[in-house]
Length: 164
Image: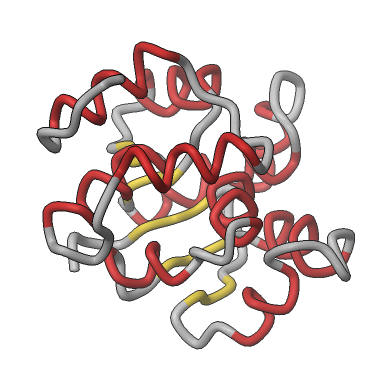
């Protein structure tokens, strides 16, 4: 395991949509989510991909935020889940699992370590959890995952796959 991970909802939902949530668990044994991320996935997302998986996952734990004032400040620019995930990652000195560029920039400006769906797939390939990053990205994109051609090329290059 590569340290403590705090996740935003989008990577969990994206991988759950393609029935690949287990990839996160294969790369990071334990993932922490703040209450708003839990609500977004499990309560407001009831019946949608990720809801039941997160509810039942023993490797995903819920943790409350201490610095609610900082969350409120961040909510001026980001959603509730993203704001709580940033603050919780700071409080736990954890790596933040997030895909949105604006959130990544904010987290980096705060000195947080970042991981993403792309980086999880790269690690999963390197540890033989998956056969092909390209295949997994193609499935994610078909299900609505947003990325860029540059990120795709970079990920495929890092794992030695062709960028056709």
